[in-house]
Image: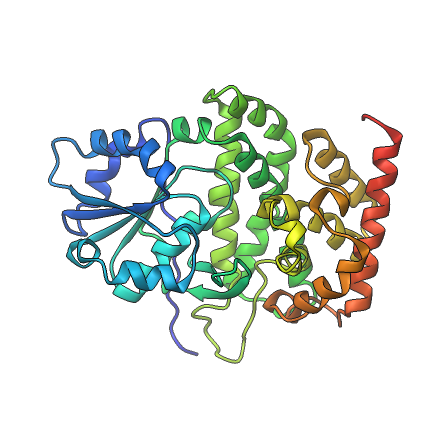
Length: 374
């Protein structure tokens, strides 16, 4: 058995957590380049400057990450003089900005610190990046040797983030427990994926308990206990699970595994080829994918419970709500069957059964909508 390196995310949370930057970066150098989304950097800039005030940390510049997590944008940033000059990379923004900078840091062997300005996914603290083609379609996963050195979750910035992104973040996080438990079924498990499986079972409850109130607080730009709990669920809990359930540094090279996500994300990756789905957010489509997975797995009672939750906060429950039609499903299923999630789904998934599950989930959603408000 070979040795393992196991990394769990480190993080700070709170309205003033950027004040911890000097202490938490003290062993990594003094010059930091900020890379992120244009709006995200604008929102975080004053807090970043205030956070390093009076310290030896210097922000050498602010660079746009390019607008999408593509290898083309990574390579463009790699050639930037300010990036080459910096000791540390500060990733500011949403999932695609963080994924771009994490990949860049891994290629340059430079430490990365993440500053999520949205609670829309767990990218800020995972050791994998979702890489897209320049046309927006899914390309590959890029696996880093370790996650970001530290993640700073400024709840004031999260509270002032776009409501729709926070809403979609709940939809994405909703998949974690169901996908991991499903993917792990019948598998040979050891320490790290077992840890991820255990933590995955803590991901759903905070969303159902605090999700509605947290969304109202985000709409009103108010920092609250509920908003913080949901943000930590979306960014940290699901991120820890991801880092434990992806086949990195396992003790036996033959024990290859990928339990981080499953058929709910297959729905998303398949939908990435459908033009009408492009206007819908990642977590929005994944939340419908959760209903499809639970239908596929014959968990109809649990599916209906999550369906009711989706309806209560406006997440989709039908194909129409995410831009899909029955005619699109062969294309969706073909793409779904090509991604790693499909390979590690328990049993022998077929495109036909997958399509049938989507149709049945859609039927349940349409019936629920026809019944009216809950």
